[in-house]
Length: 284
Image (spheres, rainbow, N blue to C red):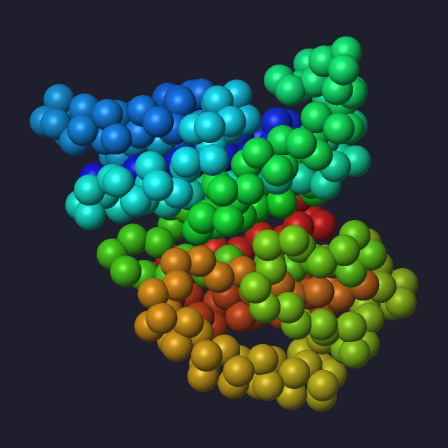
């Protein structure tokens, strides 16, 4: 059976992730005491749960601290037949504070004796046994709800049958490098269509921008170098049983050059790697 464990600090998007898995056909339970994992696995392994795609549970700081401290031992006690994936969601502390302030929700660990900022920091320490065992960590600081749902589908559910799920993502350096990037390629050395008045309001998805970049000698040279690296190393990442890979292509604003190169790479590799996805962060 497949078991997905979702964890992370409060405000990082755990409920959104659990709802997405429920929509994808998983039997979902929120706020499960981690000590009950073996009993849950035994129960959901039966025929009565055969129509579900798998089981997903949310385990977070609402658990007893002793249960969290024993998380690794609990995990090791599960049968070998259980395929376990652990998704850990997090965000920058300033982002978490802002989210609680905007929603006016109370942090589960905050109290008169422990203000919000201290509760967030303490929560990180409590969840360290889970975060250190996570197979996928996502920083949701810059993600919308829709981007998080897409990330769950692409990175957690995208790889099946031993394949590797690959996300090619364009981005703008002015907003920072994506926190979940595994490989980052900087394409800012290419001539920038932003400085061509007729192209400024277009994007790398538009034919006029594509034609401009394809007319630059550096474009094919750069594409050739990046694809040569990926040709050599992507199969080796896949053969090492890696499940996820994010390839980030960045330019200054994330509108023209990175979008064009990301799209070109996506078209080049999509048949070789069927579980391949593309996202243009600054165009969302």
